[in-house]
Length: 82
Image 1 (cartoon, rainbow, N blue to C red):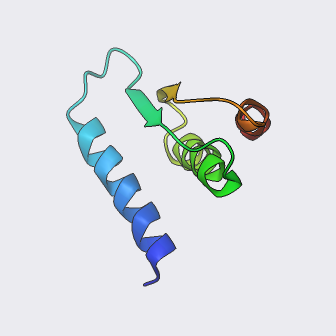
Image 2: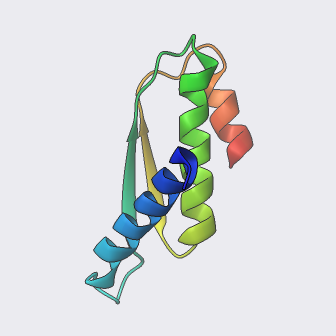
């Protein structure tokens, strides 16, 4: 198993486990706190990737992004992901 597959499967398993005991009357909520150096495009790339995985595996969830700084094209990169 490579690192990328391990991280993705671990994150999905952790979120799924936390949603099992959730109240079924409302959509599950996920708060994604993300912070990065806006001059480093590699750092900016983590958030759209995480959002994409969450949307793919948990389409019923209400996802709130709590970003750090959105400078140097970060806002546009996140908007493009959505």
